[in-house]
Length: 234
Image: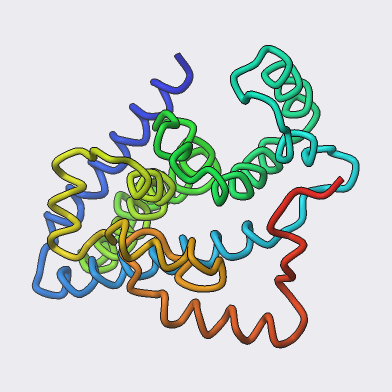
């Protein structure tokens, strides 16, 4: 019930912002939309890079799940997973998802939409969208500025969902169309990340990957983003 309310409010908020953009539409809105989409892609890459390499908290014992040798569908594993996940914060659960995504990438594509976008919508996309609602109602915000922020909000909110579609055999028609237009990356392009885990972290359109790759190399050269962070510690 709460999920439906949050999504309804979020969609209504987006609709209000889209209406404000259309009401003051100009040619400047086109590059602004593309700029917002680029920034969302950059945010997806930066987040992916940092969460991939951020160590899980000491004492969480998530390594017992990660290195479990039996069936992942057994009652023993499921009970262990419930205990371990109940003892950690939502952020640590998200962190763990990033670790398990590499050895079992197709699992991400099977997750429900809310699990993929819920935390992003609640913590970032919805508050920013509501703030933009207030701004466009209170002040004459230029249409191009609304367009930029609207693209950023949409791209940020659905970044992990877009990531999940890269690990599905079948995708909705709109995702396939956006790939053909270059607005979303293809599974083949994303495979470059899985081949090394040291490049191409962006998962929306991939436009920002050249910048993210240079940032990753600079941080690694300074001793950050160590390989130990890729898997849960004991």
